[in-house]
Each structure stands twice: as C-alpha cells, then as structure tokens.
Amino acid sequence: MGLGIANDALSNVDKQKINLNEDTLPVVIATWDVKNATKKAWKTMQNHESSLDAIEKGCMVEEANEKGQSVGKGGLPDRDGNVTLDACIMNSKGDCGSVVFLKNIKHAISLARKVMEDTPHVMLSGIGAEEFGYSMGFVKEDLLTEASKKAWNKWKKTSKYDPIINIENHDTIGMLAIDSSGNISGGCTTSGLAYKMHGRVGDSPIIGSGLYVDNGIGGAVATGLGEEVVKTVGSFLIVELMRQGHSPQKACEIAIKRIVYKPNSNYKNFQVGYIALNKNGDVGCYSIQKGFSMTKYQSNKNVNIKSDSYIIS
Ligand code: ASP
View (spheres, rainbow, N blue to C red):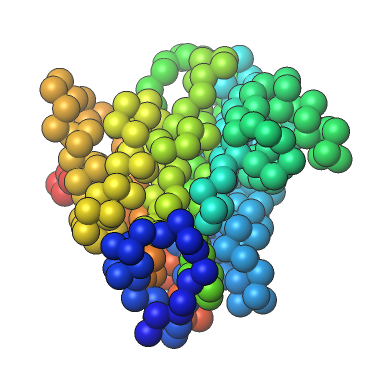
C-alpha cells in the first residue's frame, strides 16, 4: 500500500515505482557487523525520529567505539601517526554535508550534519572543519588510542603500504535508513585507509562516491579501497541503476563489475563492498572479495548478512 509521500520532487515515474510497505518500515542497513549501530538507528526511528536522526545516532555508536580501529576514536592513523577522519551525510531532501581530513573531533558524522544544516557549504576540510566544530561546541580530544599507537609502531618497522582487504571485518561504517514515512537518509564515517599518506582523502566523504541518496529511488554506500570507488563514482552509479529498474542487489553487482572489468584492473588485490536500499525497503550488498557483510535491522530483527562476492574461491 502506498504511503502518500509528500515529496514534490518525485517524478510521476518515480511515484509509480514506489510501493511502500508500512509493515516492513523502518529499515536500516549498514556495512559490516555493527549491530549496536543498527540497533540505535532502528530504535531511533521506532521512536518516531527521522531517518536522518537515525543515521547520525547510529554512526555515532561506532565513532565512539574505541575498539573499532577504522572509525572515529581509536581509528588507525596515517603513516605519520595522525588520525584523520572523513564523513558525510545526506538527507531525504537531497541536502548533504561532509568533512574531510578532520583531526581531534570524534563525531565526524555530527559535524558533517552541521556543515549541511548550518553553513552554506557542502564540504569543509582540515583545520577549517576542526575550527568550525569547536565553534559549534564539539570537544577536542586525542583520537589516537594506545592500541592504535601500538599498531602504528608495529607497522613502522616495515612501513609497507599495502591496503588491508578487510580490517577485522569492519572498515568504514556506511549506513542507509528509510523511516516509517518512507524518507531515506544515509551517512558514512571512517578514519580511512590505515597508514595512508598524510592528507589523503578517500571516497567516504565524497558525495556520489562513498554515499548517495535520492529519496525518490534509494541510496547506496561504499566501503573498501576508496580510490577505486571514486574512479567509478560508485554510489551514484548504484542509485542511477536502481532508477533504471534494477534491484538494489543487481545494482550493487553491476557497480562492482564496473571496477572489476576496467582495463588493467588489479581487483584481486583489494576489496570494495557496496550496500544499497530502495524506496520499497528492499536491500542488496555485493563485494569483490569474500568476507564482506551487511547488518540489517527490520521488523524487530537485527541480523548480519554475508555478502556474495565476485571472487568466490
Ligand atoms: N573507503 C574507505 C577509504 O578509502 C576505507 C574503508 O572503507 O576501508 O577511506
């Protein structure tokens, strides 16, 4: 049954495609096994808050989790020992905000939201993002934990730069949510590739690459080797494939193959994983390598789902 979404931006074609099922909403999905984060997001929507609030609160759970060494506090540093964060957020109106190369502020997702809501800009970087954060009341803190410092010191013995395929099965947290009113939002937050060059920015804060949401169609987020996602504008591609009628699953598969089939692609040596959600609450996920997974919270069930992958052996 349709929910009669108040969204003038939808074309008639998009409106016809929408077949929202009130019984199955809200839905939240996230990259990797992050049940605490999806739980927070789903409960937020059950509490009649928006999908945007759900995304922010869900991502904050992982940013505050010091044991996760790829997001927020405790993230693995760059090769010089600096923890630098990238994040972005998009709401159902198509607004977006992003912070890149951010130091000393743990909740990059919340700062990205502030950029979206309280500035005329989409993206703030480095010291500018940090100063804006302090002006908005964010607290300065050292993001390098003892555990991450230890890992960095160990890495320095060889200083070999090899992108790690699946960091403890949990890298960037990318999250998509559709609330009971049928409105979709998404977010993405990460400390990026471990031991990256100082100043390196990945796909996660780049709208269209690490994240894209079109409230008439659906959303997609990425994890893995950001450079490869940026080169194929992965999340935007997936949303456009869904617009053409592909399911979220099929759209993720086509976007992964876009990377794999590139001339001289060395896809065997890196991981990229995508998850996607459409307006009906259908979901999909796919990756290059084995080991990727998605967490879905829907109809009171919080489950981790193993992703199919292009390389199966
Ligand atoms: N996509 C992130 C980046 O390239 C890292 C990751 O998801 O592992 O910065």
